[in-house]
Length: 350
Image 1 (cartoon, rainbow, N blue to C red):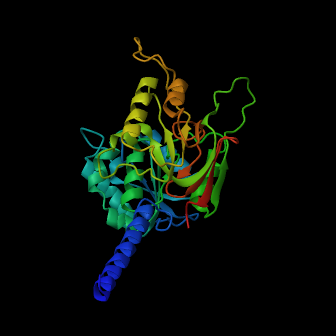
Image 2 (image 1 turned 30 degrees about the vertical axis):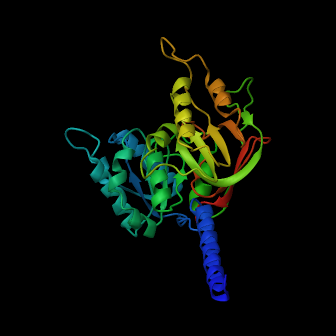
Image 3 (image 1 turned 120 degrees about the horizontal axis):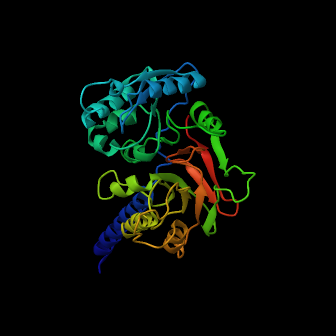
C-alpha cells in the first residue's frame, strides 16, 4: 500500500470510528428523558386550573360540588371543560371534542394546570386528536391515574412532559394524601421518600413484599397495567429501557395480571429496566365462579419475577388506594427494597 492509499485508508477508518461513536452515544441516550424533560411550573394560590373529564363523563351536581370543595381547599380557581355540560343522549362526548378541551386548556395562558376529575374508560380514544407540539410548547401540570395512564404515556413520550400520576378531583384523599399532593403541585422540592404509613392493627392490609432485593435508580414511568398493555404496538407505547417502572391495577384476577405481565415480558419491556414497584392491587384475587387459574396474586408476581436481575417489590400505596402517593413521570426515583421505599429524588415542578 503506497503513502496516498495509506492516508486515504486512515481517513476513512477515522471517519468510520467517529460516526460509530456518535451512533453509540445516540443509542445510549435515545431513551433518556432527564436532560430534555419538560417540567411544568408550580402552582400558586389563586391560580386557575382546568378540570377535565378525558374518560368517563361526570355530570352529577354532587360530583361537581365535590370538585369545587377540593379547589376551595387548595385555594385554586377552577374552569370546567365543556365535557361537563349535560346534553341529551350519551353523557360522554366524542373523542375529538374531549381532546379539543384539553388542547384548549394547554393553549390558554390563564390556565396554570390541568386535573382530571376521574378515570374510567375512554382516554385512549382521544390520543390521536391531541396536539403534542402545542403541549410541548406549553408545559403545564397534568394530573390523573387509572385510565388517564394513556395520556401520561403519550405526553411523556411525544411532548417530553413530566406529568403526575396521582389523585384526581373525586379521589378520597385519605390520611395525609393531601399533604403530598400540595407538595407536588405547589413546590419545586423533591417529593422525598415514600414508605407506607404504619397501621396499628394486627395483620394490616397494607403489606409490602420484597420479590427481588436491591437498590436502583432510574427515570420513573408506568401507571395502570391494563392501559400500559393496551398501548403496546402503538406509537404511544411505554418506553422502559433504563427506567424505573411503577405498575398498579384494580379488580383484575391473578390470571389476568399474569397474562398482562407475560405480554410486557414478551414485548421486551422488562429488558434493561432498573427496577419495578408494583402498587397495592385492590380486589385482585380469584373471584370467578370457576377459577381458570389457581395462583394467588403474590404467587403470580413471585413466579414472574423470581429470575429478575433488578429489584422488585409489591404493595406501595399508589393508584387505586384511598391513601395515594403521587408519582411524577420522567424524574429520577430510587427503589430500596430493604426499606420497602420509593424515593422521588427530583422535583416535579420548576
